[in-house]
Length: 338
Ligand SMILES: [Zn+2]
Image 1 (cartoon, helix red, strand yellow):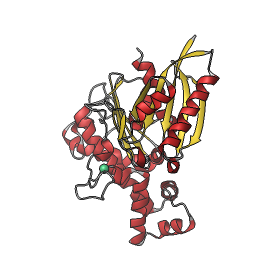
Image 2 (spheres, rainbow, N blue to C red):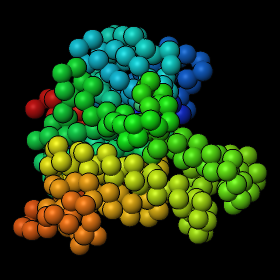
Image 3 (cartoon, helix red, strand yellow):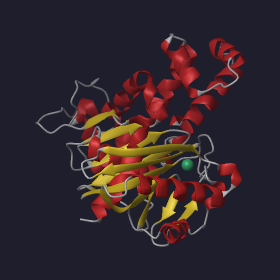
């Protein structure tokens, strides 16, 4: 009998459940809306119900090894509690792991959603052929995850990888975490819309028109304007790229990993912000300058050191799209069972 696991991606909007076998083949998938407004008991009930239905559908065909759940927010691995989660406000200090394990009678592994996404990309996506990877997920917020030697790097309490809350602008825009000038305040979908509204206030006409025409003035609408050549919209994505580039420069200098993957919804604007990422990397990171796969602009750090040797630092887009976190969560029980 084959073995499989169930991965859950618990987002602020969608609740997705997938059964995946040991090779990463998708066996079953359920997508539901996350009923955040109805409270955490309802969300946990919906999740457990979908997990049980999946298990029932696969009865007799495989052995369930466990359940992995990717949750947005800071998770305390020791207590199995969500410490803080902006998208699931009533989940703070709620013993979610114990609650789900009680209901299902199965082993459950809780993980931060960006760590899960990094694990998914490491298993089946852009970082498949690498032992180590760091990932940034650009969504409503900015998440981060690290995989080292094939395992998620969790740190002391499971809170490692919060690159979204590293400072890129000392006196910058306030962030939901309490700090100012976090990467999240410049590279999330929320930040793109905020910067567009700021630009409108100082006279950006194309953006003002788009905001007026679209009831839902989203990061995607601003990206559409950027690819049509609107200079104010393009400038916003250059700011996004520059903030990511500053963070990556610090990460590359500190970690010297072979690959850094950028995912999440905003990463579909890659063409608009990626050039600014590389400009910052060449100028700010001597480790990147020494290992860049592309010719540099010859400024800053790249004026001091040339890229030589076979080992190069890769910075690239994610491959699995919104499924990265789902596959990564499903991978958790497979690896822990080794
Ligand atoms: Zn922050």
